[in-house]
Image (cartoon, rainbow, N blue to C red; front, side):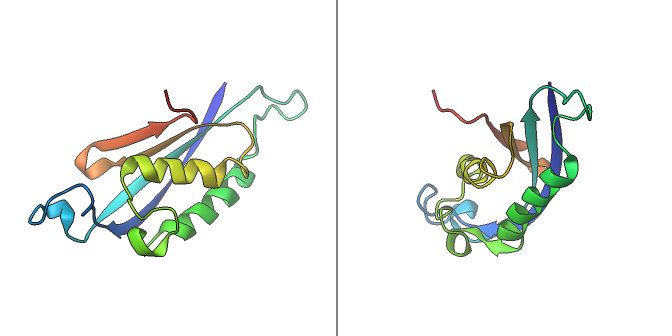
Length: 123
């Protein structure tokens, strides 16, 4: 069984390591991101809960504060190349020790219909 909770953040980045000079993504620009965090497990027989949403919210709030209104390339160690894929990996590394049962991270830019989902392993 899985539960999920979302949070949002706004941040700026640029991708000069991938896009050539003159491409819009080479220049500094910003996005509104939505992150979905899935937790997997069996409901506790006493509480009926997989995980208390309040404890998950606390961990997600820390992640949001680290990313929101930041220049990802320079302000967030580990996100020097802030693609959707690398943001998902960064969030996984940040949240996995704080969120028991972490099953999946989704990072979405809804206004341009793009996203990345990561379940903790690369094949």
